[in-house]
Length: 95
Image (cartoon, rainbow, N blue to C red; front, side):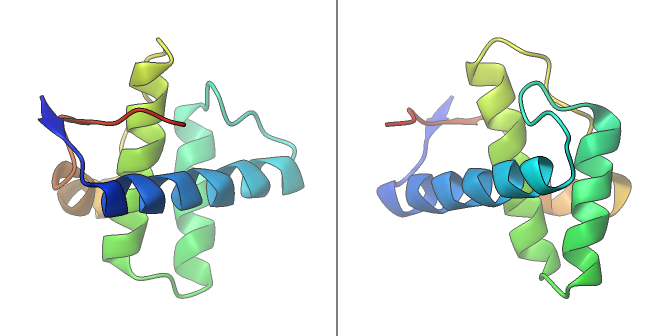
């Protein structure tokens, strides 16, 4: 398993905060998140013009957090599959 750089860990923390805020605004659980919740989050991010690479990193951050917390990660929505795979297999410790 690959260890993420400090800068990637920082971005993952920001990505998780964004996801948690969206979940709170839309009254959804962030942990564990359902496949549908992640899919809807990705759709919402695309709607406001977030870059696919950023969405892919956010998906990777959410899925990694689920694994570290002992939950099955939600499925990767189709369009971000390639971007999320760039971060697959990485681990980091949340402060």
